[in-house]
Length: 257
Image (cartoon, rainbow, N blue to C red; front, side, top):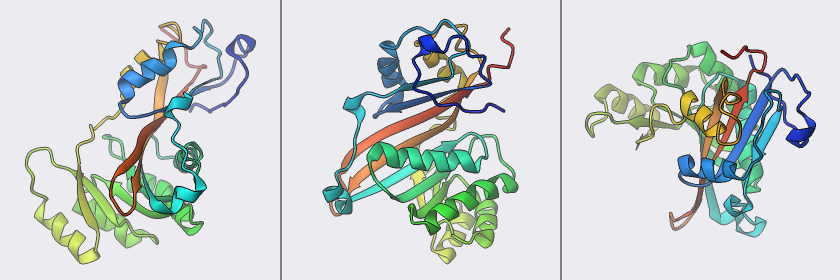
């Protein structure tokens, strides 16, 4: 398992580090594909496999909310999590708050990878989200793409109940009847979305990393999570800001082909 290391040391000073891992974090706004390249285009080429960290953020993408405006804003964060880690989901929430300059989020939605997790995996992550609700870091939590049996299992077990289930409608605009009935009985909101099943593939991520490194050095990188945040004016429903935050890691112990 990769172990993330975050460092602000210039890459030229780290070339001799045989680190166990590397982490990549990128702040962007709106359409991630082109903006990845824009943010990475000005970065120095890395010629070593041992760079421990690279952070790319551009001030023009920053959308910090002034304290005097916070009560007028509603923030929704959707976390596309690739591994069932309580630490990673907490870091994703903290990073969203940091980037927006806020202390809490109104709504956090959890999106599971297309590869199904076990219920134990979901419990691990959900318990951390519950802790964040209890500490008032988050006000409400929901999920995406759970079928009726999965949603029922989570709802009956959880201390903090999911109040939203986002559903992607692949074929037609009709919710499954049994899911609709169960959600109505439990006062769970069913919303639709059109996010891709894999918001950022490993192959595409490595391709984007290669714009800031040699193509050889981009091997074995993988996204850990993607956060999408939306800031709305509460009373008008107008979008003030939208953006993405991405974290990836590389296991430098893994031998390259």
